[in-house]
Image 1 (cartoon, rainbow, N blue to C red):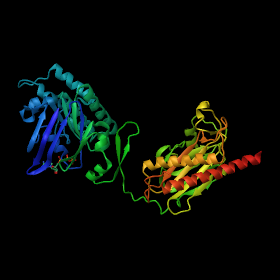
Image 2: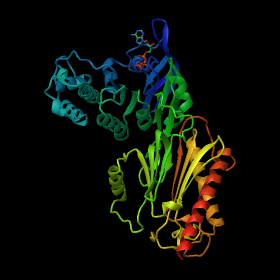
Image 3: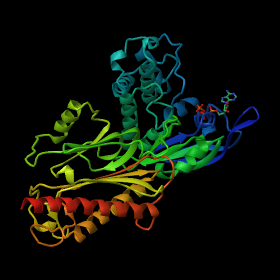
Image 4: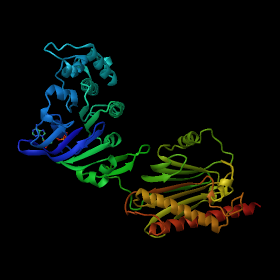
Length: 491
Ligand SMILES: Nc1ncnc2c1ncn2[C@@H]1O[C@H](COP(=O)(O)OP(=O)(O)OP(=O)(O)O)[C@@H](O)[C@H]1O
C-alpha cells in the first residue's frame, strides 16, 4: 500500500506537485493522467524515492519511504521509466539480470539458480526470451521497452511504477502488457501505479484514476467518475466526447476534430433522391449520423448513401449481408458508406415527405407492405420466425444536431406515429384479426446532419417531435392508401 499525505514536490522553488493526499491499495491498477507538465512523472519519481518531498510524507506499507535502504526499496518496488536508457552494450539477458541485484549478497554478486529461473520467467512473460543474446541497442523501441519491463519484473516487486509503459508499443503489445498487468494484480497481488496518456487505456485498465492539472488533484475516482466530458475538456483544453464502450462497462473518449467539414445551409437540399421500382436511393455530399436497424450499417454510424432496395417476395440468400454488399458493389456503391435496407413491398407505394416549415427541417421516407402485419400484443401467439412478406421501412432525416437521447426519442416518436397510422387505416393482424401495430420485420433509421440547430429532445412535446410524428403519420397513411388501392384494383 502506498500513502501520500499532503505531498509537495519541487524543482528549485517551483511546486510541480502540490499538497496531494491519496492512498493506492494493494492489488490495484492506479492510473495517473493529466496534460503535459502536470506533474505525473514528478509524482512517480517522488513515490520511488528519486525526488525528495518538499513537504508532506510518503509511506510504503506503513513505513516511511526514507526509512527503506535502496536494496529494500528495490525489492518492494520496481520502476519502468519514461525514457528507456540506450547507452547499454549489454545483451538482453544481462539487462534483465540487473533486476536481481537487490537479491544478491556479498561483493561477488553471483547469479543463483533461482535468479536464473526468475529472469527466464520474466523474459517469457514479456515475450523477450527470443532476444536474450541480442544487444539491447539492436532492438526496436517497443522491444526495448519490453526488456526493461522484464528487468522490473525480475525484481519481483510488490509495487510496479510505470511511466507511459505503452509509449513505444504497437496495439497488440499494448493490450498484452495491460492485460498482463491486470492479471498480475489479481494473481500476485501486484500493485500497479501507471502514468498513461491514452485516456481509453486508462479507462479500460485502471481501477481508479488520478487526474492532475498543474500539480494539483482535479479528481481521483473510478474511470466513470473521472473521465467526464466537461472535466476533461477543461483540463485538456480541447473538445471531446464521451461514449460507452460497446462491450465492456467503461467510458470511451473521442476527440472532435475541427476539420472544417460543414453541412450546407440545408443538408436536406444536398440530398439527391432517386425513386424507382428497383430502389429508393439517396446520396448526400456530407455524411449523416445514423441510428438504424438496417441490413448494412446498423447501430450508430455515419453514411453518405442510403438505399431501400426492392427484392422479390421469394428473395433468399444464405448470407443476406454478403449478397447485399455484392449488389452495392455491382451498382458502384461503397458498401462501407451505404446504409442499406431491403423490402419486398412495392416501392411505387412509398412516400417521401418534407417538412413545409423552415425549422425543424425534416425529410421522411416510408415504404410499406402489410401482408405481414402484426399486433404486438398478440405476437407471442404466433410461431417463431413465421415467414410472410411485407415490411415497413422508415427513414427520418433531421437537419440539426441531436444527442443520442434524442435519437432514441425520435425512434419512439416515429414508431408511435406508425402504429397510429396502422390503426387509422385499420390494418389488421392476419392471425388475430386485431388492429396491427407494425409488421414483424420493420426497420427504421433516424439520421441527423449533426450541424446547425441543436435539438436536445425529439419526443412529441417538442417542435421536432411534433413535425416528425406528423410526417411519419401522413407518409404512412398515404403509402397504406396506395397499397390498399393497388390491392383493391387487383381484386
Ligand atoms: N529536471 C527538471 N528541472 C526543472 N523542472 C522540471 C524538471 N523536470 C520536470 N520539470 C518541470 O516539472 C513540471 C512537471 O513535469 P513532469 O515531467 O512531472 O510532468 P508530466 O505530467 O509527467 O508531463 P509529460 O506528460 O510531458 O510527461 C513541468 O513544468 C516541468 O517543466
